[in-house]
Length: 279
Image (cartoon, rainbow, N blue to C red; front, side, top):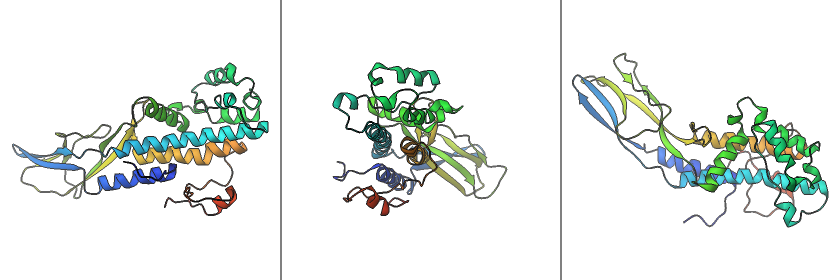
């Protein structure tokens, strides 16, 4: 069962990191030496299963980050029209993530948004939305909003996240031309994989560093899981939300950690005790 507390995005990311530390610290790989004539292969006998909490916490954190963007957009629309949105209007608020200018224009022209003045083309808020779109980068697939949208769409419709254990580095502690490191980057490490090969009767210390990666649904490329979370979180906090509210990211950055288990009189009081590192 999950904890009775309801963590926010920063706490979910910290929680995922702690689970990964507990998983990686004892070493998730069981290794075996296999003789082969005059050679010895260091092979993977077993890979410890990744805790089920990891993909679920990642999916929850990314969903919270996407919600933070859409809640900000919702509040900005209400602020600009000077009243609360009714139920029908509220359902029309969403953050687009388009990879072409034409796609963004099509999103704007959808009939259900035409009577919301802040979302009419030419408005300041639409200019802010356009500035945040993935099509503004040559590598649109690597844009944080595109990455966030694809991860959360996957979590919403199919599975929490696709995560796996990889080999980050295999480093001989002593350089030896007779020691050959097998290429294992770019794919999941599996039982039976050969990591190192060397002379049978020559002992050499080797450092093997595993890592946990997450697969992007739209590119099927793998990225270090915690770096992926940090990449998206930083963009949401320092670029997406400030741009939606002020039109620029050149403002004092929002702190990543506010204790949401405590009540505050107003946002200024909350910000005054916020921290830039998780608890």
